[in-house]
Image (cartoon, rainbow, N blue to C red; front, side, top):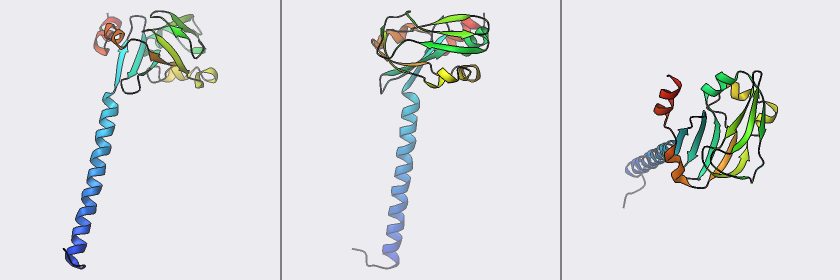
Length: 160
């Protein structure tokens, strides 16, 4: 056993440094795991879905392309939390200065949350459409996500 003194103090310092490094390593692994746990897909109707494979909850919104085509968004209508919906069913509507457009379900599921901030500030979609979710849903069948487009396939459609 080490006696209290220089050797012991040195051992404690090395031990504390190792604990610190281990904690930093674990935090970075956790952040990487979080980053890869979200699957992003797109529809031909210009909706996106970000599905968290850990929580099994998806966020749904419209793409930057859709927002640019609609123009300045001035109002968002939502369906109610708890609604069970089918693929391609209308989940609400977006009104812009040009036109109103439905938001379609990319997959079947249940609405578990709506973005309350959009009631008073629908312009948040104008600023960052692909970062501003409209509603959250519990996905009924995860395999439906495989039928949707990845980013590269979606970009080919909009860049034609």
